[in-house]
Image (cartoon, rainbow, N blue to C red; front, side, top):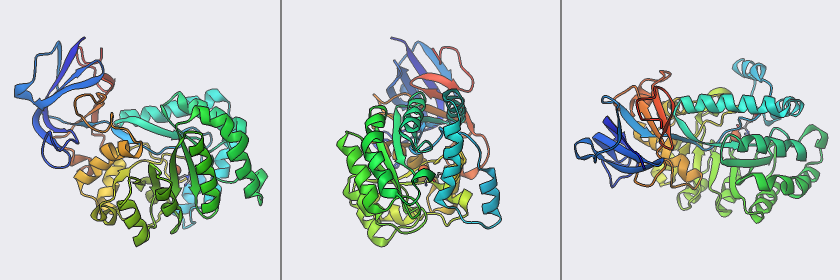
Length: 398
Ligand code: NIG
Ligand code: FE
């Protein structure tokens, strides 16, 4: 087995409070040893064990790869016109999803896969090493199944979102569509997915329809995640907590009761700053959730309608500026928080045994992710010990 040493790390974010300072477990003048795609050792560079190959990052900050726990990157078409209309004052509505559904149904698998790979590549170049991908732009049995198949080519974290919106051919017959989702569609889709999700919102699915779909998915062994409280307060948040959802996403309009329920649960509140940025809605109040003791994750929600960013650094910067998070809280939420939202403990932190997913910044500290918004600071990315973006130093990628 080959041991590779990454050293000269000015600031290492481990997300392991036992390994270093604060909740980020920061170690200065640090090193990491990678063996067989996993972290084998973490500590001060001066105490690092001998290794077969070495990369010296010259004082840079290294942090765990970002965990983007919410995306919709398998689709076709374009919604630039929706965005322009919003910037002229029009409100976001769930109905725009149907435009993307029509384009996606008309696209062949190769086109969908190429678009998905392109967006996943953008994400990787910006430091995202774990990615969740949802279906939801097919809304027929065959189209949902093929979207999940394409998604499975991009990630292991695949989510069945057949209940994204009611498709045009079921207009006025939402319960009939829910019957399809919990019946034939779930039969076809459950084998391809790890998670089930539903858009619980006005204009999409109400709480009882959402519950029916989530319970059916859970009955097939899928983990539960929920889109709720994006456009207004919603009993969907309490339902998500009651169903022990791994995550409830958006959380833009929370009541005090919602915040208390989340804080007392293991359901993560996943906040999606790109959506508020791109819809000109008020931002969610991360400070209130954190002060109450809830677990907060940040994700891109990358999709053509409400949030067409693939950048976790952008989300970190916006969350700090607009949502009351400190830089350290936002970095944690974009790494360890995302891992919690996917109920994973092998990613989102740099501890022995974790997958060796490392991001090297062209910056001395992770604060720069928020301090230097819009600047491409991600210099190099390792996933499972291999360099997947940026310069491949001798021995580092093999
Ligand atoms: O998470 N809210 C529901 N789904 C997406 C938006 C999808 C779209 O507008 O195409 C979201 O924001
Ligand atoms: Fe979404």
